Structures are given as C-alpha cells and as structure tokens.
Image 1 (tube, one colour):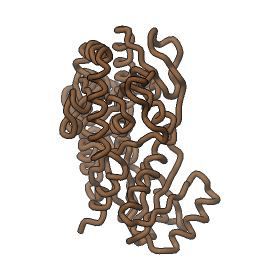
Image 2 (cartoon, one colour):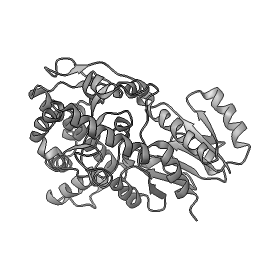
Image 3 (cartoon, one colour):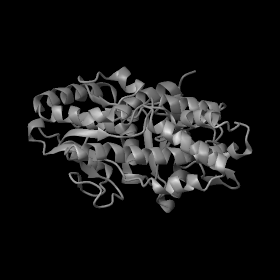
Length: 382
C-alpha cells in the first residue's frame, strides 16, 4: 500500500480542512499511509515537503487545487514529480480552470453538470465525479425532542450589488446578455449557470465567436452570474420564510443587521461549531447552488440527526425520497415552502422520523470515509 500526501490550506470556516481530515481517516481504513501537510505554515510545510516527497508517494491530494503552484526551480513542482496530483473541487470548476494545468493531474467534481462543463473546457484532463461527504460533530446529537433550534441556516451573506454593477459596466451587448441570463436563472429551477448564459447568448443574437467571449472573459461572466444568482436566491428564500413568520437561526459572515423581522443572527462560526449547532437543530436549511450533485451540508445535517431541507435536484432525487429521508423544495415554487415547513414544525414526531431515516441513509452511504473508497477505486482503475 502506498503513501498519500494531502495538502491543507486556508478555507472559509475551515470546513475543507475538516473534509481533508475525514477523508484521510477513510483512506487509512483502506490501508494507506496518509500524511497531511498544512501549506499555510510555510516554514514547516517546506520541511515536510522535502521529507515526504523524498520518498515514493502513490498520490498527492488537495482540495480546490491548493498546492498546484508550488515551484521547483522555474517549473511547477508537481510537473517534475512522477506521481499523480489529484484535486477535489468543492465549488464550480469555472473558479479553478486556470490552475488545472499539472501533468498527470486528476480532478473530481461533486456535481454532474460541473463534470460536463469541465470535460468540455478541459477535455484532456482526467476528471471524474466524487460527491461530497458529510461530517459528524464531536459531541453527541441531542434527542430530537430536546433540540432548541427549529431551523438552522449556515451560510454567508452575499451582496447582489457588486456583481450587478460589474455587469452594468460591460459592453452593451454583453450587459444585455448577462441580464437576460440572470433572469433565465431566476425563473428556472436547477439550471446550470453556463446553460443559462448560453441560452441568453442565443436569445440576444450574440455570436459565440464574438471576441468578447474569448478566453477568461467567458469564465468571468459566468462567475458574475453565479454570484448574483446565489445572492438573490439566499435572500429570496429567507425573505419568504421571514414574511411567513418562520424564524431561522443564521450563522455566517457579513450578514447586515435589520434585514429580517423574525430571523436570528448568531455570527460566523467555524465548521466544527456549525456541526455542533446541527446536533441541536430540528431542521437544517441548505441553499447551496447545486444543479445536479451534492453538498456536504445535506449529508452533515442528516448525520447529526437533523431533518435536511434542500432544493431538489436529480442527484438528490436518485439517492433520497422526499418526505422519507429529506424535505425538498423547488426555487420556482417558493410560495409553497413556508406552508410546508410550518406543517412539519407542528409535527415534531414526523420530523424526527424523517431525520432518523435520513441519518441512517447518510451514515451508510454519504460520509467522507466512504468517499475514500470511491476515490481509490477511480484513481487506481486501469
């Protein structure tokens, strides 16, 4: 069995480093020797890399491509090494496209539409699907009837104005196209951002050969649409619940005061603290923009005994049954969400039953330890 090196870095709420630790534990269960290197501590990382890379490795693994730009002289370090560099992407590939340049590089996506995008734009890259895994809190989940948080929503505030203003500063034909794409996204359930943009290109008669769409401009435009849509959706869902008088406990960065009447802000929490809050929550609201894949929040909510409430998509529908393992909502049917939540909040026994069934399913199939087996089977194939 070979040695696997996992790079850790600086991530929001430290969530991804917890994923790395959980994945490392899973890989050890498969007989691998796993060494983690924290690249944020330059001095100790340099010493660790010299020591660990002096010996054979089966694989170097990172999340989000962290460590791709390490240098050996004038070349990228991992271009000079004889073993694969694998990266697990935890957001849309459009944000990482320029770092996916290492020889013998392999990349995973957690969403099937992301994988299609990556294969289209990086056809020579060895890419594959790897769903997120969930994480359990270090403390034991509270009995459902004693949980003191009705609905927990871990997410950061996103201001829609900066991306909107940047869109309005684009050349007129690009501005028209991007605003059309934003409306297509806003009025459609589960559409990938690149599909909305391509539809808007056709509808506004903008040629796909236009120089304004060349190179990194295309990825920049998709990024603007992605941020704008996430901002609008988060505020839209929370506004709908607030207007219905359904209080939500929100933890995350940058939320301004006075946005809502009924919701409670408890400030940013690191990922371990969020997991602990999940053990006290009856329901966890997931608003991640995932057209056809998974987000760890759904699995983590389940593992910590909460009922997961998430926008539906084909991947979730393949693995879970609405009303049995999870509660689904649709962005285009947002007016139905408050009544559905209110109905379940008034039936704690029904909520507890769904939460328990979801917890069993997540523990059986959706942890990072289990993803370790999937990862090894893909990377050692052939």
